[in-house]
Image (cartoon, rainbow, N blue to C red; front, side):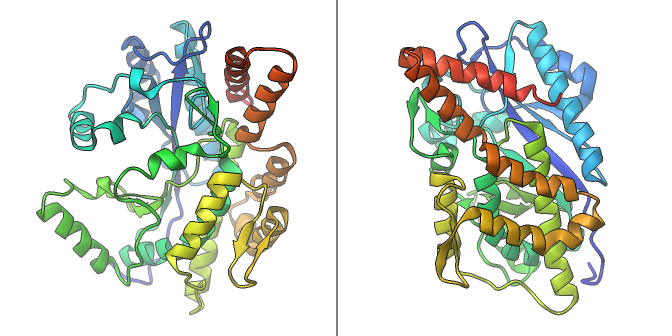
Length: 379
């Protein structure tokens, strides 16, 4: 494909939700199949089963604007919530469940998931985690791989704004995104390698396929990757946001960052390449602290408070936000900093319930109630 083809920058969002019993607040580990059937009657193939039966996944259509993506996501979230409620269940958007045990879950009977469970064993069975993936249309193969290497620098910033996984099996982990710790046990995860061309990337895929390590490139679970199904660059690092407007803000950031990097390339410039080890350190900091303790600015060789980094980021992509008519969505990140991410709110709700005299188990059920309510915000 010609390296001079301008990207379309279309956008699509995928989200994974958890189904819970509103009485016990635990996961519905064996929900009725009629939930998926009813959802498909309403929204067709935009809803799919996930690895665990207590999960359900949705994907927007290809959108040309952030406003369109927001309406799509509102429709999808509303559908899942309404159908779950009709089956006496509730839906939460969080990357881990505060009290659920992974070893009590049942995986979906589907060839892809059966193979995954067989090949990965306990590592796969522990995948009681949910994420948000954002696709942006970049039709040129080489450009897609080039931008993948550059945008990796910014992904820890987006993770810090999205954290929603502070609890695991009834314990406060001390991490804002324990999901990342679980995900890291899987092979072929983390930051992508640096490739000089799309051809180099495809040669890696072909070696892995020909040796029988993977069936196709969908088994490369990097934090950002060229989609094997669509001409898109798929961002996979972030937690799922409990509030829909936070998810839209992060999707807008990712789209604007890609356009900013494309503008640099168009002017024969590029973002400085940093070693994956260095970026991985910020990835860990975002997982551990969220935005509380700042991230490393490698150019300045110091840890910079996140509010300062955010303002620099807003300035960097303002032209692109204006182009995409999503300045409000970009500036919404300031509100996330002010009130906290889902992880902050979950820990605060748990602490307040404990201080009010509730036993730890009751305090965690209170967190689930908060998540149910927050997931419905804006629908």
